Image (cartoon, rainbow, N blue to C red; front, side, top):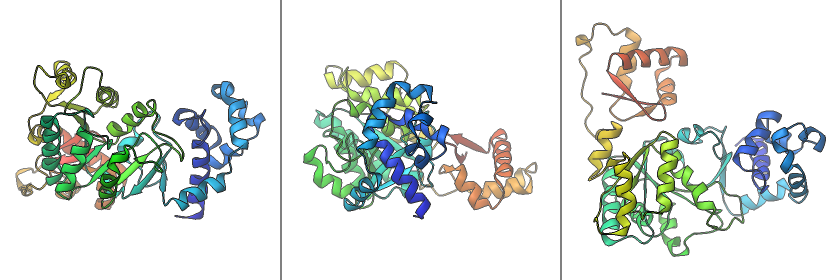
Amino acid sequence: MGQQDKLELLYLNALNRVSVLGPKRIKILLDYFGSPAEAWNASSHELKALFELQKYLNPFLKEREAIDPEKEWERLVEKNLSCIGSDCPGYPNLLKQLPYPPPILYYRGNLDKLANPSIAIVGSRRATFYGKEVACNLAEELADNGVSIVSGMALGIDTAAHMGTLKKDGYTVAVLGCSLDHCYPSENRELMEQILTDGAVVSEFPLDTPPLPRHFPQRNRIISGITLGIVVVEATAKSGSLITANYALEQNREVFAVPGNIGSPYSRGCHRLIKEGAHLVESAADIFAELYLGNIYEEQLSLDLGSSPDLTATEQKLLSLLSYQPVHVDNIIRTSGSNAAEVITDLLSLELKKLIRQTPGKYFCRI
């Protein structure tokens, strides 16, 4: 990390510690002042120019006086926590698409594999044996085919999803509703350490943030936001998993639901989602089919370019770089060696010729 990057994150962390701000107001500050450092050091006179913050100006100034950005950064270092800003390379591409993405993400572990296709599996904390078995089996199937699994590390369905992924040595991410100096629930401390072997534990909350009920709906928008879609395995009629499903719909993600016993209260949420148009899931194949992921480890079929005489040389080159596994447009541009405008034009042409397909998040794959 360069000195400039560290300085930006240092002040971004300080802004994130101000309780009256949050993602929307931090974005307003950054858009106006241009950088976290400028926003943090702005005078009260300069801040008064922001009409949207007038109501919060005095509380902001009061809290700012009590926060030392350098000391807060030292606390992160002491606790061995990493962080990444929304403008930094490596920040999850899908999450950037939200209207107000978390301006800073704190994490432990490895975020690199979040660039791969990811699916969230969520559900009831008081899950049945059936629900936990289904969540575990789905996670195993998906992980076995190279799909990353995201969940919230709660008891019940979340735990089963993480465990199923770990059984296959897959990549899994836990998104917490508290800061990373807490482990919630405490019963999952050992699971968290297992996740950190190759996966990641993530939060948008600054140090000292407890797992309060109001934090979990906010956390849920990240669970859906970093994935191509969510699978709800078991949910009561008022389950928090339905909040995640609503976020997924708002974010243009796919929503899947597993049917259950019609007499079980833990099936009502899933059955309601299915009635409202969620995709019914019996196995991972249903998810692959809907997202056009196919089997990621399926042997790539060779394409006879001679049968497509209308392809230009650059289109042929680009098509040869694509597989049946979705690849993000940034990776395609980097691999191709061409400029971004040419690649985008050729991708559009190949899509119109029905040789490739675009999936949510600007991923492309062969058909």
